[in-house]
Length: 195
Length: 195
Image (cartoon, rainbow over all chains, first blue to last red; front, side, top):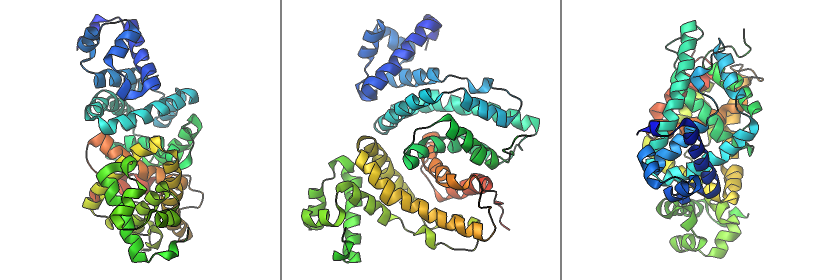
């Protein structure tokens, strides 16, 4: 994929349009024609740049994340985790929750979407989390063979999926800060109360 | 709901038929007519007994659980958790995963199904888990104000949802035993290696 043909600004504009369309009509009804029309670009450009609709959607999602996790570096794992949560606001999280629910449904019916999300969206996030964890290992905060290390994403996904299911509440910063201290940090053996 | 009108055997037969139909045609196409035809009962009986399709489906799911969690009592929380996992087999878990994925999709479109599942299936499971936790508190294994106590279901749901999403593997006993030791017990402050 030759991403260099578009300026970063133009790329960002396209991704925004894809997410808007996703929210408006859902994955199934989102067509490359609709994206081309909305963004005044040609379908040929879209296919040349992204290959397919699932890849375009996955890249748009990745672009929508407000923060590159691996660049967070507060000096402690606890600080990094809480900073990660602090960089999203509740309003954005509510929007994201609605979007992800719609996509969860589409994933059941489109295996190519699941593959694209895994490769272009989920794996880069996990890689970013790993950078934080490895730094914490390097500082001696957690041991390299801590068995919970490889389940960090399970814990986080659990919070996002289970919370609305069990509690009928949308995700919030407050909940996530609490969950980090109550579950994630203790599972990793990091004292929740800081230094 | 006057459940007493049917014998337990007949009730079990009806629940089995509902789950079979769910697997065959999915929630949307499952009709009370189809259940009545499959089980040679009248729609009037079904409605009198269960009130509605979402409630019938939720009760059928609850009935399909092989074990009443609160009756597990091995003498330690670690033992109880692992016993809970040991009582399901991998084949059943794979069947359940497929079923739950189909229902996850239906839940997005049917709020009455989410309500019924929450009330008749999720809450009783959480109540069963609470019995185990309270026994562990009583034995002094965990402290009553452990902040992770209220997130046990989040941790477990996380395992079930995140595992197939991240790993492209279906759920297995082996994975769950490992996850209990690596994440759930440490988060609760219970040594994973037993006594």
